[in-house]
Length: 174
Image 1 (tube, rainbow, N blue to C red):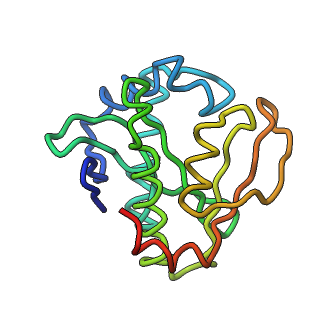
Image 2 (image 1 turned 90 degrees about the vertical axis):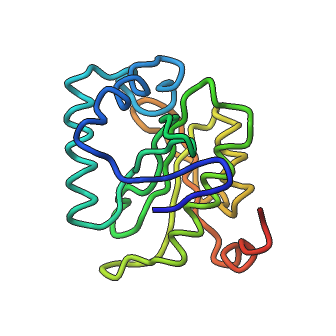
C-alpha cells in the first residue's frame, strides 16, 4: 500500500487475527475507537474478514500497520463515509507520542490524493472525539479542518474534512 520512513502499511493476511486481537483487546487503545470498547477474538475475526473483503471488492480498507521489521503496531486506512472515504488509524498505546500517527495520516492523505476512488467522489473525511486532542491535532497538521461537531451515541465528535489545498503542500512535508 504505502510506507514511510518508520512504518509499512500493508495488506492483511487471514492469519493476522491474533495481531488484530492484541490491538483491539487493549482498553486504552480502544478508548476512542468505538462504543463497545475492547473486542473479543471472535469480533476481531469478523473485522478481519470485513477488511479482507473490502480490499478485494473496493481496493482499499483499513490495512495492517507494521514496523519495517514486521512487528504490527496498528491499523489504518480508509473506511466508507457515504460516497466518500474516511481516514482512520489506530495505533498501539505503546507507540503513542513519537509522531507515528502524523507520519501515518500524512502518508494516507497522500495515498488518497494520488489514488482517488474511480467509483466515487474524492472527498476525504475523518472523525475524532472532541476530547481526543492528540488525534484532532494530528488531523489538523496534515490538512484537515473542522467541518462540524455532533453527538454520536458514545462521544461528541468532530467531523473533519481534508482541505484540497493541503494536497498541494504535502510534497514539501517529510
